[in-house]
Length: 199
Image (cartoon, rainbow, N blue to C red; front, side):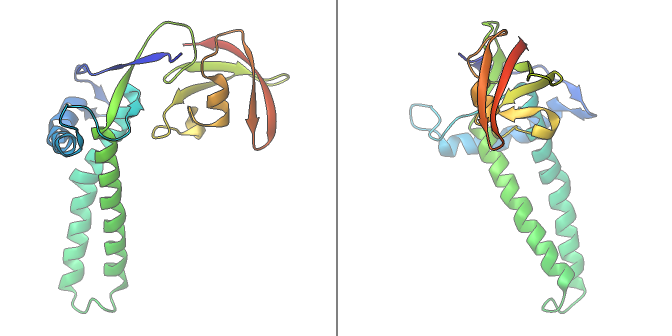
């Protein structure tokens, strides 16, 4: 059973890493509205797959989108303008590279807009099972304790301790409680893991 449930409530404004999330919401709200209007069914439900995100993960993606649309896009436009002013574009490698960067940035913007428009926030519950959003402390025989948060593929950052629920370890932990011993089939072989705690 999941450790989080879906909620559509509006979160109170926060300041995190110097960015006002109220500002983020105000800037991105029109983007969400356009995406939702174009992708929802007539009964008001999402027509595509729902992307379940933790509140922290959603804020991270919102900050990335804001950075790309309000800063990086303008920087690229300025670089392209300077390249055009330099004259012959056929031999201007810098201009060609900037156009390539523009394509990558616009592709990422479209990806983030679509993902956020089709997202649902996960709110913590206290049923004791490991699920999306859970922070799980685990230990393998003879190894030190490790802590991971189980998140959706869109939020996964293994180097930062955030593992996808679709990864071998994430799948092995889902639905279990503290005290359970599970096996995870990984590319390196089977791992026997004891679950120490779940938050």
